[in-house]
Amino acid sequence: AQSVTQPDIHITVSEGASLELRCNYSYGATPYLFWYVQSPGQGLQLLLKYFSGDTLVQGIKGFEAEFKRSQSSFNLRKPSVHWSDAAEYFCAVVPFFNQGGKLIFGQGTELSVKP
Amino acid sequence: EPEVTQTPSHQVTQMGQEVILRCVPISNHLYFYWYRQILGQKVEFLVSFYNNEISEKSEIFDDQFSVERPDGSNFTLKIRSTKLEDSAMYFCASSEPGTGNEQYFGPGTRLTVT
Image 1 (cartoon, one colour):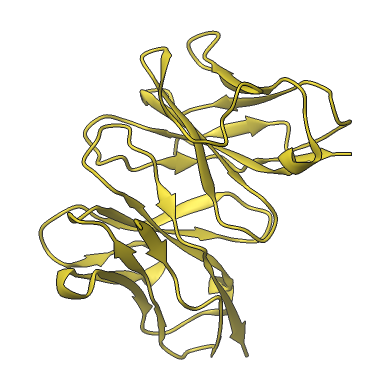
Image 2 (cartoon, chains in turn blue, red):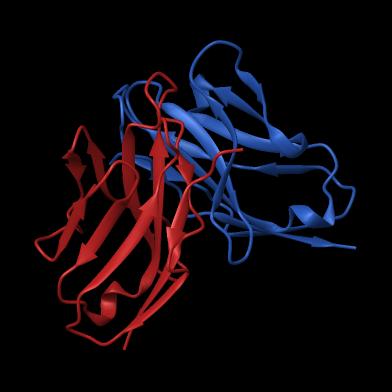
């Protein structure tokens, strides 16, 4: 079945440590790929996106993500986590090139940051 | 920076009542969406809207739901007869053509059905 999988429901990292959040998708063609962040009580903020080209994309707040076609993955990384990064992170795809196409979201990964 | 706004931020209603959730998308955007997030679950697509008509809708978006763009700025979601299971956070989003469906989300309306 077509889906977006975030295998880690909850991750805790120490402030200053590196972070990698995993995302896998199962679609035949390469979809458009996104990472969103949701702080408590807030809406969804777009961190970064991949459409084509360079497979390492940079986003806001020091985040980056790497698209790996062979692994159907789009993992989010940050070299040094700050306490303010504590939030829920959602990977999302637009499965087919389609103007106005819907986003399909993963289950989300909740990130906790310890001092 | 332009943003999507939603009102109200929190709506409490009794089962069977009608509710209208309001959104003002970003002004030059042409595609509009509603999503919902039941507490503790993932964000789910409800409906997309373009050129004054529904482009796509999910199985969740049954006859109880409707959307409208009553004027040049507002985009509304109406639930005709609310059920307990409609309690969720409802997000509006918008996107502009040619951006690969980069969608910008509003802060959400928390709907509580009692």
